[in-house]
Amino acid sequence: MDHQKKWNKIILVDDDVVTNHVHKKLINHLGFQGEVITLPDGGHAMSYINSKLEQPEAKKRGDKELVLLDLHMPKTNGWSFLQQFKQFDKKTKNKFRIVMVSSSIHPDDIEPIKEISEIAEYIIKPISVDHMKKLIYG
Image (tube, rainbow, N blue to C red; front, side):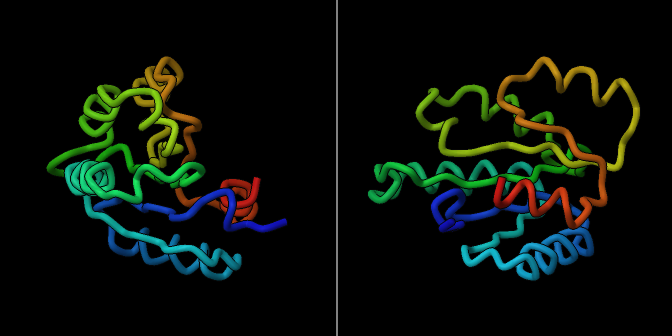
């Protein structure tokens, strides 16, 4: 199976530098050959997505990116990012698979996420090796 066909890039959006580092090391350890981008908050993630949409290669079919989005961050948190992300058209949203990642087990954080179709999954940090492998390779 050609793993590069599933995700061209994996974007780690977390204000915790250590979490980003650990997740990036894990992704590389699992053999992911694509680019791994780390961003400190939802604002940077939204800027990244907007810049991608302005590039000519954004028109290519099949380009998909996995976004591991932290829920609680200073500046632009996961909720604020999602409010902006929801405004994109379906074609744009389909280029990204958003997975919410948080250390929170509080129902006030988890329950509303179930109602947001743009979120594929909610994962409690830290992400296990097996779960990361499933995210990357299916």
